[in-house]
Image (cartoon, rainbow, N blue to C red; front, top):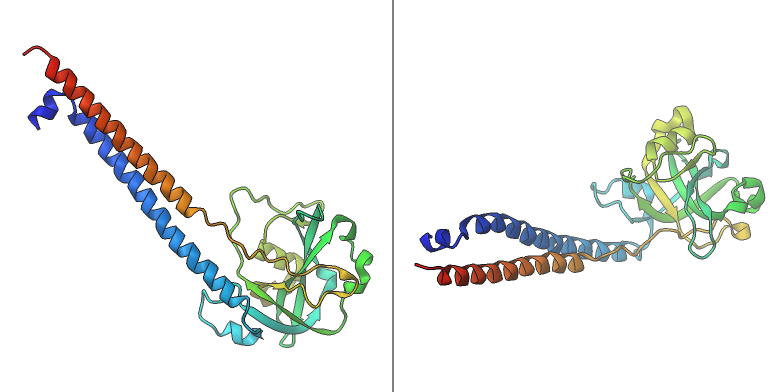
Length: 247
């Protein structure tokens, strides 16, 4: 310790050690996130390929098991209450996802993401064939309402367009006084069978999740290794200077 003090190394090391601990902790956290993300991806791949179960049976499953569950629901669409989320398609350009309340036999509702339409087809009259009448069966993936992201804007009051899946706001806008009868899920309709006329185009669920946690972990561990290298070089330099100082 005396040698460290005399070389002026105590305080630099005291400051470096917490920084090193933080970098190592961040790297370890990213490795844990990597393991979690890989488990989630495997879970999604399993669920989306299972035979669909009845919506009522899915509701009985424990919390946390509903996301991406493949279900079938029967009811009648309330096309007059369509809601639109701005969702450009990388191939087809600007457009929307159409969310339509499906009224179930027991009087409750579930908001169904029927799929993508271009800007030119936003008006229901431009895709009248796809406005299915009467009782229908919808097969799709259950999605739980997300939290609003930091950069997700609120609904445009002039156009009525949404920019994120605001469950409470969308159900109030679509169902009014019946909003409390909505199941707290979204249902993403599958691409097949296609809607008459081809619109909306179902199958919009994104099933590929970004998984760059290993890259992030290596970055944090690399910074930790760099810091150790800098400290070693600094210590060697200080010791050399101290050794050459006159007695």
